[in-house]
Amino acid sequence: MNLIKIGIIGGTGIYDPRLLENLQTTVQKTPYGDVSVATGSYQGIEAAFIPRHGARHSLPPHLINYRANIMALKQMGVERILATAAVGSIHYDFKPGHFVLADQFLDFTKSRTNTYYEGGSQGVVHCDMTIPYCSDLRQALSQAGSDLGVTVHNGGVYVCTEGPRFETAAEIQMFKLMGGHIVGMTSVPEVVLARELGMCYANVSLVTNFAAGLVTGMLTHSEVLEVMAESLHQVRAVLMGALPYIAAERPCDCARAVPDMDITK
Ligand code: HPA
Image 1: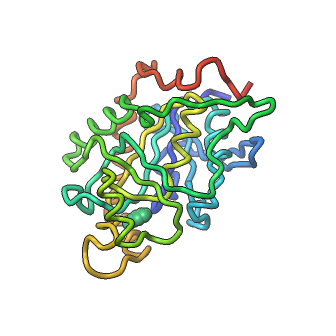
Image 2: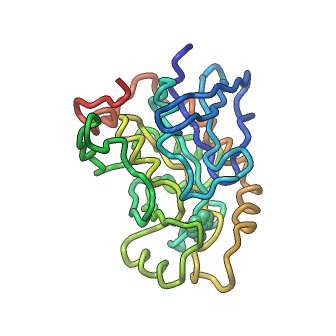
């Protein structure tokens, strides 16, 4: 099979692989479980697609098989991952409908397996995480956003919570004091696992709401879905518009985050 170098992980609201043409579905067997992956192309650029929450949003954030998903893409030859997410905003300048390309994260997850390296034959590895999100991919996405005239904030601190509940108002105040800009439930460990396998990873967050306590009233998942549905065409356009800006060879050093290790061999 042809190696496919670009992977797209669709978050909340992005379940349909028909952003690509000439679609096919393959099942990748990984040591962590089987993953159904759609493949196709956009303007001659091949890409693989996985809906993170399943085709009908049946998986909550803490039960997603992150290791299987990332390994499936790695096995197919993917080097770069663009991953969408719905997020709440902790920062008043980041408004619903805006895009944020996270450049850092704060990890508040609790129960997730967050590494491929569990000792024994896999070894013990402490992966560099200084700059977890690939700045070259962010540049491509930011360029696509400005071509389209949408508001894209290139950089922001993604606070990853365990979920599936939303946050308390006090938690959001704490995250704000700590320097968080957006809050979601999925970027960790996804970005960590991609980096452990030497892949570039970019987060394309759409702000769907102000986070708990920053506006009055309760927060609902249907509100998140509604805003995502309204911006769906823009999310797709930013993703697809970025593909032609991604250089064939990787200029970044994401491949060297874990020197001399290749768990897939
Ligand atoms: N918190 C956590 N995850 C989210 C939010 C939020 O406010 N909005 C969309 N995903």
